[in-house]
Length: 202
Image (cartoon, rainbow, N blue to C red; front, side):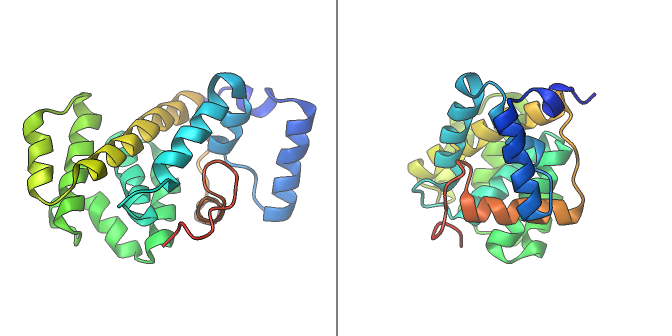
């Protein structure tokens, strides 16, 4: 059930901002963006800072890889909104929609590098069970992932296990393909903190 707070729980100035975004983009602001304006001192500002660092901060993983991780975690959680949003963003970032689809359809046979495959397995296991043991981490290291890469991937998983639950609890509106594509373009240009992300996308 969609909570009405996503429609009305904002100041007059914030509502004006939403209208300006819609005027210039031709699309309404997605609920994932709206929610950071609701009680920003409690959730929004912290979430923007953490997610921006996880998804656009310095990392050996590319932006496309991290967006693929977000889509994969969302698929494990069966979060319809976030699957659509981050499948579109990963596809735009990589320029390879079929590769993204292959990972979400069958990770074992998907055409990805072994360090990434092993890391996605760790994220999948963590998302399903809420824990991951040393053996799983060791297999990822043996496959070529570095400790820093695993740390960065776990940050992505933390961000999207939170966002997935918010999307389902608040009943985020599911966009059409055009809406998801517009949101993906925005995320690749501006990032998760609302500032320019030029130079970070692949």
